[in-house]
Length: 112
Length: 217
Image (cartoon, rainbow over all chains, first blue to last red; front, top):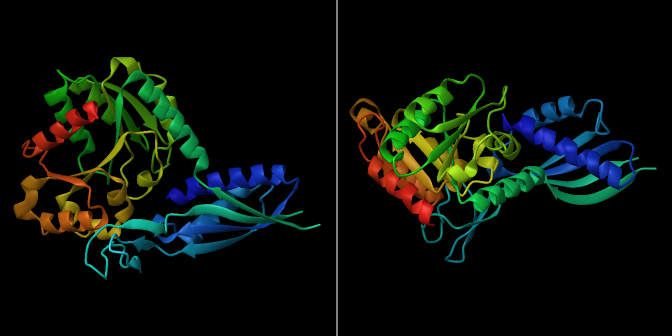
């Protein structure tokens, strides 16, 4: 249940951003969440509703964009993570550098 | 008037900031810190009891005990002969940098060589929250099954060490340590794997050597 902790962090950052940009209320925002983070979107949505109550985020619409896990192998091959194991389909070697899929980002807010 | 703003901020930046502060405190006193993670019942506390009784005379050890509730584990650590601070997370499934900062404030870090943060039993969330540690170590006990690296890759990816515990139960459980090791290395080729039993003591020498090496590195 890391969704609750993540939601607390999201609301804290949203409230900071609202102040920075002179917004009294955030009406919508977009999160980018990497596939490798194992976040359950519906659970995060519920947690955000609960944590956001009584703040500038209360009632805001949340758009969640899932970023696929991609690996760059030392052989040069780029591939999507399949079944969460990091085996290169080109050379068969394990590991490689994670290019995407670990994001936990707030990317956009809208408010008035 | 509706305003739209591009922001791009890391959701975990608050935690990362506090983790960096913790790390500075650790480095200022020279204590080395290991974040120990596993599912509930994999043997974290038993491993630490063994480690304290084997290395306690040469390494001054402290333990931060993270549990959802209760203080049984901290009592076990103190009986084994190390300093312990209990954190109750009141429901949270992992420790974060802030909780660890509060706990270490109660410790004399300069009097320790090694501090182990025993995380809340959970194979998912603890891997996401850095607490300022020098290394993450994890335990997977054999009865949990050999499909766990494939199901919970992040923890295997983040850990420098994997202890496959309860090897003494190998004849009785349908789990293949070879597969665990192979899949763990598929996710993280650098991971060090020790097959151990905290009941018989089998294989623990490698873990002790790794801890001693961490002191030098």
